[in-house]
Length: 150
Image (cartoon, rainbow, N blue to C red):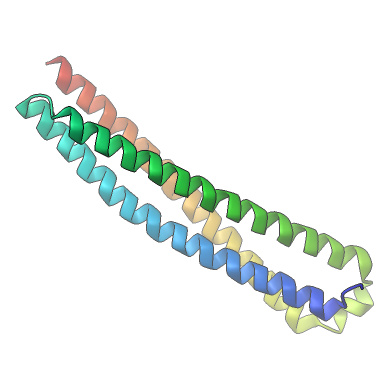
């Protein structure tokens, strides 16, 4: 059974809201991870000052990191699936309905466009934040390497 234009628009709006929610959740996780990364760098610096830490602590840290990476991969897979689903629905909407039919649902189209703008803005902010975080981590790594050489 083919969906009507309004049903298709409603689905797109719901998926867009879900994507925004997931991106907000991922952003909160990234912020807490950044705090954890700062703690790890501080611990590494103190270990350098005081000598090598215990092997057991290092293994535990690696296990936690691996667990976090798996969780992050699952979240990324969910986001990609939602994005693909949304793209397919948008394609179907414009493929199956004429501009005249879509004009009847102008409010929903405007909502969809507003959510699209929010998604673009959120992704751009997240990308910019990730870039700056990578640069910070690279600088920290260089500083630690230089300190170790002393």
